[in-house]
Image 1 (cartoon, rainbow, N blue to C red):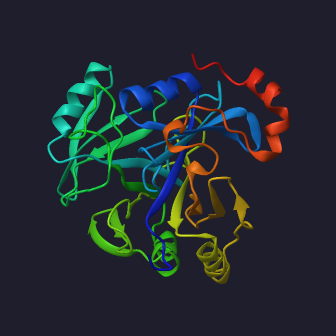
Image 2 (cartoon, rainbow, N blue to C red):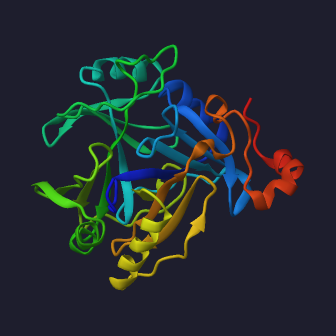
Length: 310
């Protein structure tokens, strides 16, 4: 791996109810609960991480389930759609599986690739896409969802913006993406630093009202780097471009920087190290409530106020 952005690390969204969110992503979509922890700044709220067996970067969808926050509004200045890669020929399975679970779907194509789109229980917009090239990532399976159908991880994320050019400059000049395709108001940017989770789409729509973050919307998207040394190189690049960026933040399972790109989307850059097995073994991932070090002394009080999951 070079000192480059390695596609997407994770995406973080907002939910309205912790148990409903947990059940949908583990039981209906068949993802693994990789980590059960709490919001660093609001420890009375869970922070769930869903992904493949090991929580490989590029497979990790995380949620802040703020109980009763109410619905947000998708719109400009947000990452509006999350695209998952699914195995070739599996869309028929997913159509029937989702409909069986009372999820309405729409069929379509993006840049010639077949997909279905639907919303999670909070209205978060998801797309399952059959890529034109084989995705060899290992999957997590459950009884109802086997290898030939299970989600591979992210394919892309779509940003909806009033003006594309300022964001395009960040993607190309700072993060190393290149324009691959354009059809009307949709742009596709790809990095060749990695083969999967390497695609960012932009929809430019100057008439789209601004989005509002709450349940059913994406809070931020995180780009992947190998380690915290490379992370700090990117901090210098972002600062040199005249954008404000946070100091390095220890998120226990990765180190992070945050900055808001000119179109309004909150970007994070996150590291592979140290990973999700730093505080529990692989076979136990997601089964224990793990607290940030600064909150461990309040464990009893935190457990008392957290929503019940069973």
